[in-house]
Image (cartoon, rainbow, N blue to C red):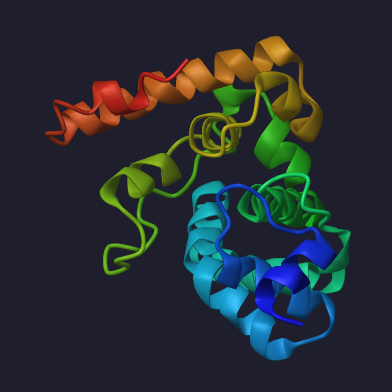
Length: 206
């Protein structure tokens, strides 16, 4: 069976996916480690960046990124082609990251504490200045208070709606919106203070 026939038979092609990627998905579903490795090679840098933005810790991001691909191997048969594979994968990754955070013994303190206590502020020196995969903007995002950072990444970077974020983080929709605006304000102040005077257009997403 040629590639077009195989893609048609398995119905996994979605607009925006290449024939190669769709074939890798088919073969990975059938247990091909080689095909799965191709998907890993294509996406692991982007998934790592997502993990790092949400966790603000290099070691944790590396561990959770690997966990994402373990989960992907286990659940790839759940992908039905109803959306782009990348969209589905980012959703899987987001759930894995949030699961990791919930397992942390200080989850409630770190994410849902009264913010005036300052308990959930990320360390400003995260040791990623030599990591070419992450931009200067990512490093500033990592210094946001954690709840604000999670909302900002999910909304501004990953494109989730506030209603979805509220459900993920078990907060009110209004809280998600206020945390986003807080993050945007803090990020703008941090960037301007460091000489990024033209960054406003990039973060002025509503």
